[in-house]
Amino acid sequence: MALLWEQQTASKRGPKPTLSLDMIATTGIEIADADGLAALTMQRVAERLGVTKMALYRYVPGKVELVALMIDRGIGEPPRLERMTGGWRRKLDTWARQMFDRFAGHPWALEATVGARAIGPNELGWLEEATAALTGTPLTGGEILDVAVTLIGQVRMIAQQAAAMGTRDPEQAMDEAMNAVLSGREDRFPALAAVLADSAGKNQALDFGLRCILDGVQLLIDRRN
Image (tube, rainbow, N blue to C red; front, side, top):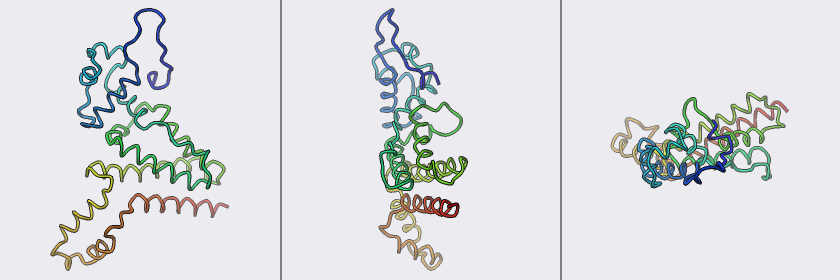
């Protein structure tokens, strides 16, 4: 938490630091982007930076803290939704799509953002923007948080499929796999064969999911009003 939240200031005494937390996190991100989170070690980061592992420990206590720094820098600052026009729905749609882009750019972050852990200012800022977009609606505080969590779940699901298949368009890859299995078996699975034929080229998993979620939120708000 201290590394994520407290301003790091250089001491006026002693030699000038040769590294910064930003440099270390950026190097870790480069390694994880290329080879995955399992390939990330303090030794590899130290070698990439041209220092010893013991020197690296002067800045970051271990891999857990390093990954926390990487998450906050990799996800980055959230979109500033208050500058947008069009109401809460357009804001949340933009928010979710930009989150998908961040996860698609750093697939290792999907694995790293599960479970109890320290959360940094950028990541918390994303949640702040989503909740602020719904502030003023008749939704309760718990419902506003649930909307954000539901959108995150949709984004993560599609991003995880994309990462597993090595493509930003997992729906097309899945359709191709399903069609290969169904070939010659259409009479056994007629309904599935029909819908796959009808959906050819219509890759809309992210769009459809976001639209359905936001439609449900709109309906709830309208009923309350």
